[in-house]
Amino acid sequence: MALARIDLRGHSGPLSEALPRPPDAGADVREAVSGILARVRLQGDEAVRALTAELDGVVVDDLRVSAEEIVAATERVPGELRSALELAYGRISAYHAHGPAPAPAFHSGGVTVRDLLRPVARAGCYAPGGRARYPSTVLMCAAAAKVAGVAQVVLCTPPGPDGRVDDATLAAAAVSGVDEVYRIGGAQAVGAMAYGTASVGAVDVIAGPGNLYVAEAKRQVSGVVGVASAFAGPSEVVVVAGADTPALLAAVDLVVQAEHGPAGLAWLVTWSPDKAAEVEREVDRLVAGSPRRDDLRATLEKGGYICLVDDPESAIAVANVVAPEHLQLMWEGAEDALPLVRSAGAVFVGTWAPASFGDYLAGPNHVLPTNRTARFASALRAEDFVRHMHVVSMERSALRELGPAVITLATAEGLPAHADSIRLRL
Image (cartoon, rainbow, N blue to C red):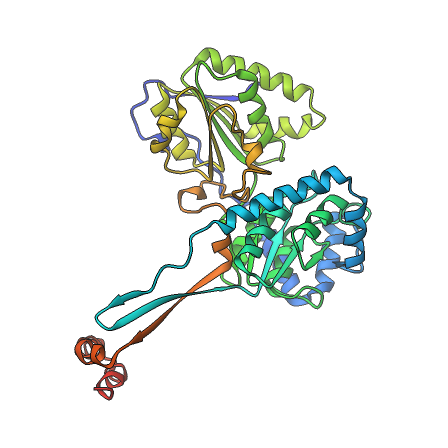
């Protein structure tokens, strides 16, 4: 299986014109997602159940997973898994709790401005299903929301063929203090959380990655609810390798992201043609031996690239244009290139810091911007579940001094009541 080749050695023009442009993410499913969201908005639970039967092939009567089911699942999972879930949740929570404190009050000429932080009331978390289960995503989303002080955290995740949610996911929900779990997946889950149904109370913020349908649904409901971490869609990685990079490790890290399924991206960028060939051979060997070889081939044939450049600086320039979800800098001295990085969801420096560690235990979130939205968006954080409200108080002397300027501005804008609210106080 050959990865697409891009040779940029000696290239001098704009990189954005030389590199393949991402497709209009969600374009193929936009109409279908609009239909799903409209059905959920108008028909609520009835639509959610029908769509679950149509799209997931599962008939579900009770959308909410009972507390008894969650407890039973938590008791069924191996003790080693529960310990790992608790360790991961503790590290993720500690990272988010270490975030910035509210800014100190600002004082100027008798005017005081304070920052009032308030968490949203309800947060909706989405954990994908289907090809794999993602209890780690439950931890990532719930930890950030809980640290932010959200009172109610809701989880939606697709049911299995038997209509149940798998034990590992329910155990993660229990470990992370999720308040409600619903066996709903896809765009209909996003619609249910955004609009509310008889079974699912509407939320204020939705977070969590998903396929193109989920990502497009979040984009369409943005404005009805807050949507954290921009377009968190199919997985992406750019691995930057030099002549000294272990080929097997670079190859497995490309395969790691392709393992998530179709529509993702896996780029190898290097200034060593020999290393490119060596890594490609290792990718072929790993894919051939994987039980998920069909999914891997489908992803790599459409989204796998080997890009040859002149030097490390050129490699980082390519990565900045791709703006990947994960960026791995895997050559000796990569730390020196870090100041050049401008656009990536998360950066992993050195041979011993793979993105897979970031998926579970590093602490920062693995819910990251994709589809080049890392140009303006960031990883999911506790702050995504918090609103900032400024509080203004002032002394009467400050109003006497500054009020005339307000009257002047309000008069210029033709808003006499604004001016009068100041004038009457003077």
